[in-house]
Image (tube, rainbow, N blue to C red; front, side, top):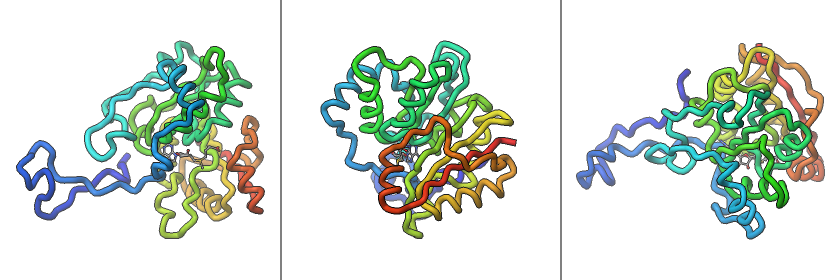
Length: 261
Ligand SMILES: C[S@@+](CC[C@H](N)C(=O)[O-])C[C@H]1O[C@@H](n2cnc3c(N)ncnc32)[C@H](O)[C@@H]1O
C-alpha cells in the first residue's frame, strides 16, 4: 500500500541545515496534510495531569518516534506492537481512532470488560481527561493509549487482521471546503483500516456533519473492502460532548457501520 502523505522531497537548492553543511539532516520534507492541529498545546489541567501521573506508565504505550517532522506524533515505522502481549490475553480488540476525552472509550471498556480497547489520540490533554474518567481506583486493565497520529501509526504498528472493530466517532469535521483534504476518512485511510481487521469485522463511524457523512459514504461505498452494514446507532456509543453540541446546533447525527468483506 502506498502512503498518500509520505513526505515528498523539495527539488530545489539546499536550505536550512543542509545549506549550513549538515548533510546528515538532508533536505526538509514538505509538511504533511494532517487531520489535526495542536489545540491548546499539550498542557493538562491539574486533575487530568494528576490522572496522567497516576496511570500513564501503565496505560500509555511507549512508542519510539521517527526522526523529522513527525517526531512527536509519528511512530518509528520499524516498531511493531502485539496486542495480545500488550494486554496479556487473547480478547476481541477494539481500536478507537481519535478517542478525544475518552467518553466512548471509558464507557465501552467498563461495559465490556472481556474486550480490549486500544485508543489512538494525538491530543495528550484528551488522554489525561480520559484517564481522569477512570476515577482514583485501579485503572481499567482493558484500555491502552498510543499518543500518535493514527493515519501514520496504523499503517505499520499492528499486525494485519488484529482488530475485531474499529471506531471513528466524530472525527474533526474540517467544514471549510479548502480543509476537506485534512479529513481523516479518505480512500487511503479506508485501506489502512481494512488491513487491520478480519473479514466480517466492523468499522463504526459517527459524525454530526452531513457533508462529511456523505463523503464517508462515497469513499466507503466505492471501496472494494467495505460494505454498508447498518446506519443504526453504535450499541456502545454514549452521548458525548461532540454529539450534544451537534444536536444543539441543529445538526443530524449519522452513524455508519461498514463490514469488511
Ligand atoms: C472532534 S474530536 C472527537 C473525540 C471523540 N471521538 C468523541 O466523540 O468525543 C476528534 C479527535 O480526534 C483526534 N484526532 C484527529 N486526527 C487524529 C489522528 N490522525 N490520529 C489520532 N487522533 C486524531 C483529535 O485530537 C480529537 O481529539
